[in-house]
Length: 247
Ligand code: SAH
Image 1 (cartoon, rainbow, N blue to C red):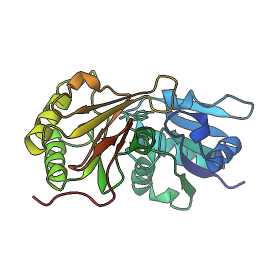
Image 2: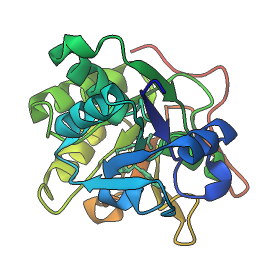
Image 3: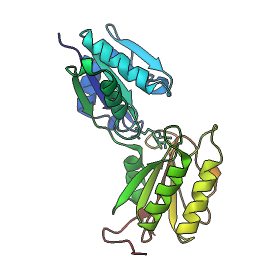
């Protein structure tokens, strides 16, 4: 049987948010590769080999999946959320570029519900108009580039979703992010801290930019900043479909 690599998104946590095509791919897999906590979501069974690995080993993991596929195995790489959003799909194509002898391997990328969209739905519709997503981690890019993109997006009056806002290894950068946003946006701008979305630990906290503190975010939080028109209606937060201001 011809081998394959399928990169799947497991969604934000709730099993009801795993798509049927992802469930089918997992059922057909002979090998599951991924960051340890994501692989832990997969039930072991006969004929299935689990390959958990560290989160800094993305390229090696992708190369391993291509090798397994070349041996005729059905390798599935699991990501949380969507595999194309700050996750394994790009890493797979980087590995493929570095190993062109694998260009004949059958590949499929199966989308999932990304954290910012699950968080937005739980809060209302804060991303109801133009928005962008920024990964605040400087693992793969200089922090100066994070700062630049943030400032430009704020000047463009985009609503924004921030991934990887704050970790133990870089506790100060999110404070700098809030500082830049306060320079560019009005103090009443709404900002949402959505933690462990779609799990039993889910919390969503909406405050103004003036009230926001760095401690409100951790690595299980996706942060959503509204645009200049984002507002509350009852318990909900939404961004009108026609909104935004020119500088
Ligand atoms: N591919 C994933 C993102 C991986 S980066 C996706 O599409 O969602 C990891 C970051 O995603 C975390 O630091 C956090 O910012 C966000 N995240 C992932 N799952 C989350 C959840 N259930 N609730 C809140 N944020 C989450």
